[in-house]
Image (cartoon, rainbow, N blue to C red; front, side):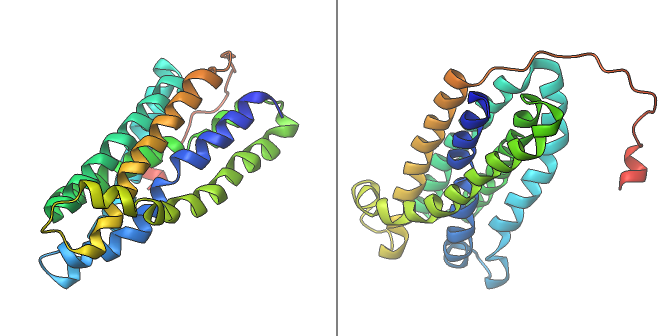
Length: 214
């Protein structure tokens, strides 16, 4: 595999850490911050909605300016929303936590494009292997995301207000750490990834209309 595939695999491991942390914290924090128990999983639902809403405009933007700068923007968005999530937990704002979850879904829509970018950097016969290798980064993210809660305990104690509930403190530190991981993912993309050379491919059949897809 070329270097770009390894770069995208590392970026996948870092950027996709957002998803398991949201899964781990969304229900726990949401159940305490939500005004009604039935709204506890709304942050998780909004992260999925954010991903769905982001896919189409992001892919079209990539066609216009290339994948690299959209990837960079996605990591910046993930880092900023992680800080927003930490702040919302600190002040006990369910609305802000929901907003952070929705925007995080948009950043995940960007990260899900890494595997397609990897397929573009290799020959057709290696495309499946390249995509699989990038997706292995998701296994690393599945471990790293929840572990941020453990590592964030000390940071949360330093940043949290004195009136905050003790069981929320690790999540503040976890989201702050997540913002630094997203910054690292941005550096990985900036330094290691290049847009592939575009090739004009003639197509004989137009794509299906959106109404048919829906």
